[in-house]
Structure formats: structure tokens, C-alpha cells
Image 1 (cartoon, rainbow, N blue to C red):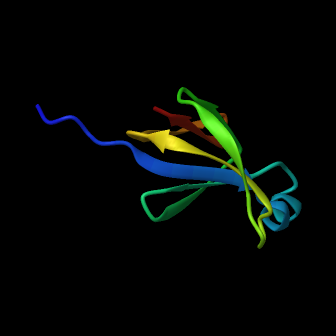
Image 2: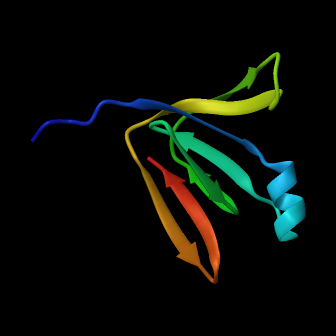
Image 3: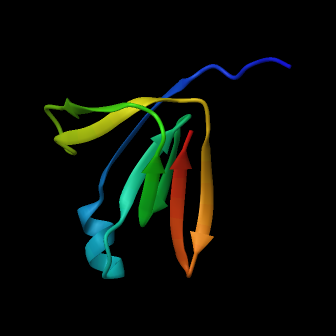
Length: 80
């Protein structure tokens, strides 16, 4: 079985969507796709990344996969 290679991911707080939904929302970017989640569990090392454009500060790392789950009507991501 071929091992999956790690891909870069990053996530940040999404203020406009959080205000619209009335709860905290994170934008999780993985494999050129953006996922909106209310929570996440990260099982890989992450580091802050400062940018010159918005969002100014993001958390990034390298992961082989992510799992998206809905618990009590809220979406959660598990980063593996």
C-alpha cells in the first residue's frame, strides 16, 4: 500500500462568517479547498505564520489527511 505524502494546510479565524453565523468559525485550507468548521483537533505539529495581507496570522502545518465530522449540528475537522 502506497503511503500518502503530507500536504501543507493552514487555518485561521473567519471573522465575517463568524459574525454572520453568530458563532466562531475557522477556515481550514487543505489541498486547494477551503472548509468552514466550528472546531478542530490537530494531531500534527503546527506553527504560526505571519503574512503581510489578511489574514495576518495563520496556523500552518503538514498533514496526510483531514476528516470532517458533524457533531450536534456543528462541523469539526480532525487533522491527521
